[in-house]
Amino acid sequence: MGKIIFCFILGLCVSILAGANSELADKNHQSKNQSDKLKVFFIDQESKAEPFFHFNFGKYKITALSDGYITLDSTIFNQNLPEQQLEQIQKQFFKNTKLNMPVNAFLIADGKDLTLIDSGAGACIADGKAGHLAQNIVLAGYQLSQIKTIFLTHLHRDHVCGLSQQGKKVFPNAMIYVSENEANYWLNDQTLASLEQHQRQQYLDNSEQIRIALKPYRSTDQFKTFQSAANINGIDVIPISGHSLGHYGFQIIQAQQKMVFVGDLVHSNLAQFAYPTLSVAFDHDPILAALTREKLFKQFADQNSIVAAAHLPFPGIGSVKSIANHQYLWLGLTSKP
Ligand SMILES: [Zn+2]
Image 1: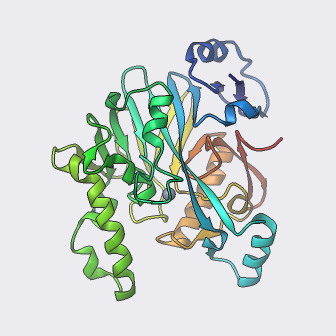
Image 2: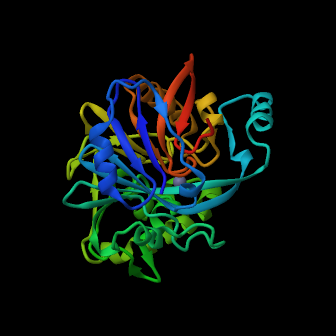
C-alpha cells in the first residue's frame, strides 16, 4: 500500500495512507518535520486503483470515497466570460469534449462518531458509472450502520440520491442535515410557482428524485435543516454560495489549520483555477458562484487550508496555490509532478 506524507507551507503535517492501515498513518503523523516547505507527494499507481483513500488530519481520520463519475460535455464551462475566451479555454484545457467528472464523498471519523459528507448519485444517474459509494464505504472498512450523521452540501442528485435504494435507507442510523434554504427550494411545493415556465419541468424531475431519496429519513424524523454559522457535532457549517440556492461547506480545524469540504465550489482542477470567474451552466447563480470561488481560493491559499472537493480528481483532496493575480493552481494529490 502506498504511503504518502503531505505537508503544506508552515502548516500541519499530515500523513496519508492509501489503504486501510490507519495505525501506520498515526505513527507517521507524529514523526514528521513540521517546518517542511510545500511538499506534495503523489499517489502511486497501485493506490490510485483504490476507490477509497485514508488521510489523517490531527485527531480526525478522513476517508475520501469515490462514488464513480458522471460523463458531461466540457461546454458546461460556459459562464461569465466572452465567447472568444471560452473557446480558447476549451482548446487549452479540454482536449476531449466528453468529460468524466469524478464524484467524491468524504467520511470524517472523530474517534467517536462517523460523519459522511454527501452521499453520491445512487441510482439517479442510470448509466452505472456513479452510485458506488455505499460499496466503497464497506471496502474502506466501515459499516453503513455506523454512520450517525450525514451532511449534504446541497440537494443536487449526485449528492443526495445515494441516501436510499428502492425506497429504503442505505444509512439506517444516520441523521441527515442540509441547509434550510436548500431544503425549502427543493422540498417546498411553493417553489414551482416562483419559476419561469421553461424551468418547471426540469425542476419537477429533479425535485421528485430528491424527495424520493429523502423520504425514508423524513418519515422517521432523521432529517434536519441548519442555518448559517451552525456548528454541528464540532463541525463548522460555512456558506459557499452560488452553485445552488443553499449550498454549504463544512470545516474542521486542527492546530490552527483548516480542512474545508467545499462540495461543488469548483468542477475543474485546471480551467477554474486558472480562471476562477468561469462558472458552469448548472450553477444556480453563476456570478455569485464565481465571486465565492475567487474569495475562497484566495483564503485557502493565504491560510494553507486543506481542501476536499466533490468533483476534483480523486481523492479530491489538496491545497490551493496563488500563482498570479486572480490565478490559482490546484495541488491535488493525484496531480502529476
Ligand atoms: Zn455535484
